[in-house]
Image (cartoon, rainbow, N blue to C red; front, side, top):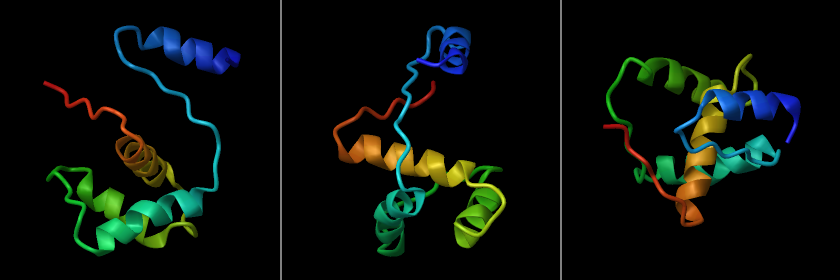
Length: 88
């Protein structure tokens, strides 16, 4: 792991930390975007909804892609048998 990964992982003791290998961000987003278009993905209401949707709607031409990366990683985890851990 890189030194940044070690620092990040060390500062998050008690949390499950997974470092994903880089991939084609557009291809990764396309996987869950198709499911979203089909109505198979639901957002939990929250303050983050509007910024999330704003970013998703202009991806990949926008300035930021953090929400898209997070959604792609979460979708990949669920599709490949990962666990969804909900906060209490």
